[in-house]
Image 1 (cartoon, helix red, strand yellow):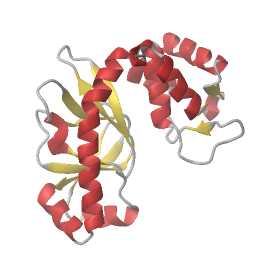
Image 2 (tube, rainbow, N blue to C red; image 1 turned 135 degrees about the vertical axis):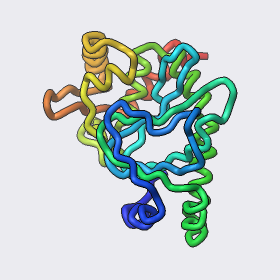
Image 3 (cartoon, rainbow, N blue to C red; image 1 turned 90 degrees about the vertical axis):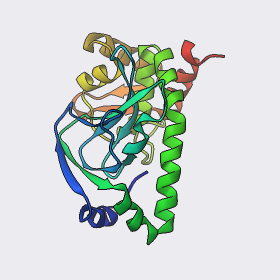
Length: 220
């Protein structure tokens, strides 16, 4: 879920601020605590961690996104962590303080709980999906997650909601930069992206969804 700027300011008075650096783990299954984490600035990601140490990106967290850290270790088969993708700030809000804040706004509490349970219910499915998808499928999923919700440009293309470098894209999908570049070129040929150099990518959400459905890991 996304918390408004006004609510963030009020929550900040009950919270401990964290300044994070790229690559830093903000929360994990081993050290999840009983806090709610609210991203204030920067970009982070929720990842699934396999027993061999591999990590799969499950959800991207932008400013205003909330994570219930208590839920990071909800099953015996998968571990999860929140990892920074850039420098930024977050608030660690003790759950009792967040609950008291939300009592004055029941809609917020319902939204927070619904979002938390929805996230938990889909994490295992997304982890399995990401393992099944090849690099091309994972790249399509990443670009779809980053697609702006704003109005589409001509042809159905939208910009990315947050800038992300090709190096970060390669790291997120577990591929080399040359391999990632080659796949981006193929996706451009298939009408799913437009590369604009320093201006960044344009992506076609509906076409990306179609390509994800066509990958071997999604068939049947």
